Length: 186
Image 1: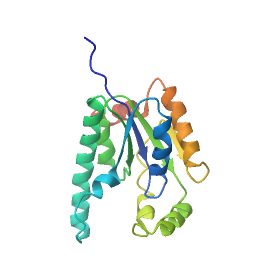
Image 2: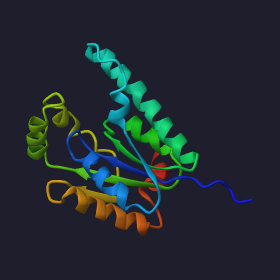
Image 3: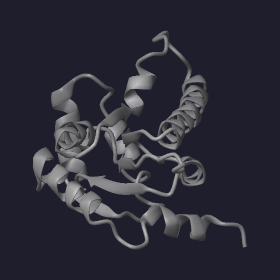
């Protein structure tokens, strides 16, 4: 009997308004297997929307991240392929992903310059102004990637094509394997 298949995770990491969801929507139909799109915002939108203090909100988001990481890992360990849309603004969130996720992770840096993020955020009108700017110095400071895309220079389809070319031709050592070694206790 064959061992059960473990799913692949394509992890899109970037600030709010960087274009992660747009890339995922373009990527899904290009992939050769069924992938589930699991944006962290989808889980966050399921919670009540009553006002919270900044401390309550941060505690809530911390628990959300822990649940999201475990749900994504569970999907992959059960044999499902998933595309994640995340804002890894806390180093412990990346550590948790590295510890929980199976080996087959394609880690994607979704980059956009701050002035363009600010323009997009203002144009969207569906989130607080300044959210992208607050994420900007945090999301990429602690990570190395398999693939990097700049959404100010590439369309969502071009970004998806770039990611797909990596998925189809994986590198011998993925970023998550290198991060696991770097984060391992000495």
